[in-house]
Image (cartoon, rainbow, N blue to C red; front, side, top):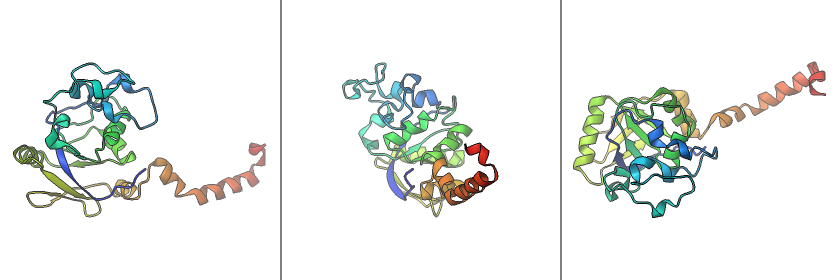
Length: 212
C-alpha cells in the first residue's frame, strides 16, 4: 500500500447525507477483486446520464454537468468533503477502491459508516471526522471560493484551508501508523516475519508429523 504523504489539493463537495456504497460503486461493476480499474465508475449513476455497464468506454458516455466531479472548478481534487453517514449501506470494499482509484486520498465528514471507515485505513485513504458545524462552514467556503484548497499534514494531524486557520483532527494512533508507513494487513503481518518463521521452525521440531 502506498504510504500517505502530506498533500495540498482542491476540495470537491458531495453535498448529500447518507451516501451509500451502492452510490459510490454500483453493483454491476463489482466483478473484479484487483482493487484497480474502478475509478471511471465512481458515483456512476450520478456522474453519467445513461446506465453504465462493465467494460463500457466511459469517454463516450454523456456526463451530468451538475455533478461536482464533472465540474472544471473541482478538477484534480484529492480531498472530498461529505455529509453525515458517508459510506453507509453494504460493506463492499470496492467503494473505497473506487475512491482511491479515482485519486481521492482524504475524506472529510461529520460521521462515516463504521465498516467503510475501517476499510479506508486499510486501503490508504484518510477519513477525517470534524464536527457538523465545522463541516457546514467548509461547505460554505468551498461554494464561495472557486479553487478552494486544503493542505493535509497527517503527522501533525492538521488541515490548513487556503483561507482560514489550521484545523486539528483526531486519528487513532495505530491507524495513523498504518497510513504513514503504507501498511495494509499483509504489510503489518510481514513486519513480524522473523517471529513467524521462528515459531514455525520451533513447531516443526515439536510436531514434525504435521509437516509430513
